[in-house]
Image 1: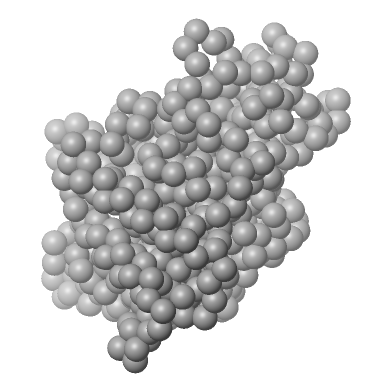
Image 2: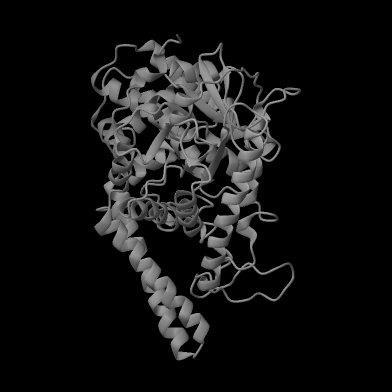
Length: 511
């Protein structure tokens, strides 16, 4: 970065989906994972690849959770997505024929639009990326378009884990997974839900992180800290970036953000076809049919507006400081495409506008830190990007039983692991699987769903805990009979992420 650098925008593509591989259809099964691939991941990758092929080179950070990347790399998930997409396209074709017969012109127009759009998504997945989205992301990391961030292996909410061993194991397994799948060891860490508690910074440093990202709620009260400048923590051995809350709200707030615009596609779906055909509308107004032409034009307008908004903030900061600022904005895949259908189009227009006008730089945290080393420190406290800025969304009376059960399983696994530090053979396999099941049960999704009294797929947490306890029982045995061998092999096949996970990840000593 040169002295003419006036500031930067660091977009972080955040994505997570709990372990749903071969989850069937109860109650939602694998559908959320397939929807994220179709509506969020493939469209955003198309944006990055299209721009690269046209000679433009945007820079973004990637904070896809390790468990999401594991699933994207799994051939079972890849096969099931193709089947799901083909069924979705068949529904579009059936809707098109039906609405043509009924002479519902606009409905038929939308069915044709979805059919063309979906065929393009499937073609990108199978032909452009050879079904392997992780390999395609690895290529973007290799050429510098994408900077990968590490994170907790299964997107565990780290502040609520009972043992420091679990925190270190989640971060260690996550970093190894990102390095193996994307080909670059991450220098930064994305904390799930921006969840931070005092002490986690030591585990981050032990994991080799250079920086991490938090919500401003984690800044100690009374501290006057701008979100446009990174700071030192942990005795000047680790750097923290603050996410730009106002910039995020400008995008994702239903009331004041782009996603709530009345021209954009509403998430409500038509009952018989299960296709979305209405736009957001305004207040109690009559619901109007969706028109992608007007919606995608509005996405371009919003992209220009956001560029102007960021430009003004960076210029105002530069007028008061002796070094340029950086605006850190996470873009969650659950919003960008899945809940905001036009989000990828907005992202494309945003990149094109910045790269053509160059009002500021598209950057990632690492090159910014190479050019501008922090000068000041900051004191942190517990916090998150949850509604109250604390841990309350994941720690509710409704989720207490599950949280206690996960803590009990942590105690058990740590105890058994310590008892058998040099296990091999079947005992080592059982311990590896026990740690794997524990990590899957620690996913933050289960606590969030249970706390909202919306069990959804949360029953899967109890399933993983049951398997974890069973694996600990097997590890205690001196020899496994044929039935035990069969059980172990079956569970290893069903729950098989993190192929190189070793149970000794729980025994690593702190630095």
